[in-house]
Image (tube, rainbow, N blue to C red; front, side, top):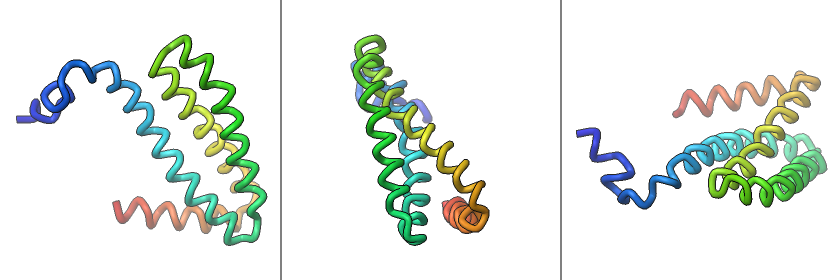
Length: 118
């Protein structure tokens, strides 16, 4: 019964190389959703420059990592090159939030509401 949901039965064996990359990109989506919540908090707090700097940092890191990792590891390298900058920006954002405890409380409340609804 559960075998019906495997990529082999749905898409065929030619899609097997993409499965690992898609799993990595799922983490990219997770981190981007966390960042979009935090970015909106920065906008509401009147600090759009923080959002701009974080997005610029992510773009630069992704640009630097994309070519060498894609050449060396193929599609998996491209997925990793997209995910690593997001992880770093989330860590930097959380560090910033811990320095400013007021926003951390608001961020925690939003995260709790988000995960309770899921």
